[in-house]
Image (cartoon, rainbow, N blue to C red; front, side, top):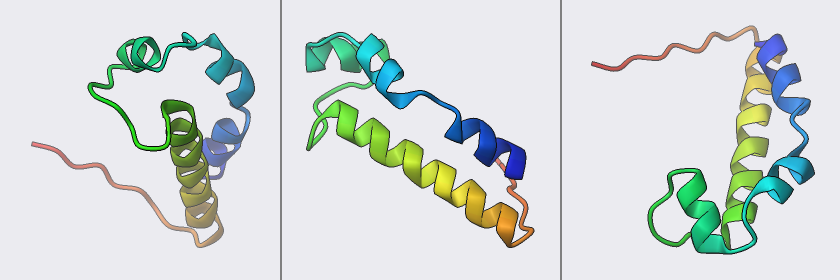
Length: 71
């Protein structure tokens, strides 16, 4: 958990966001997003990356595990 949180914290978000096309529609198509996102794509990505990083940081501190399940 701590390793995942550390790796997520190393993502250079300004560089990642700068690599996306300036046009929101074009940027959305690059990441596979259909339709518009309220508040803008870049804000959405930043918010969700921070939430994911915070989740893994908290899980590591609490010695929790993450289980993925799909069928």
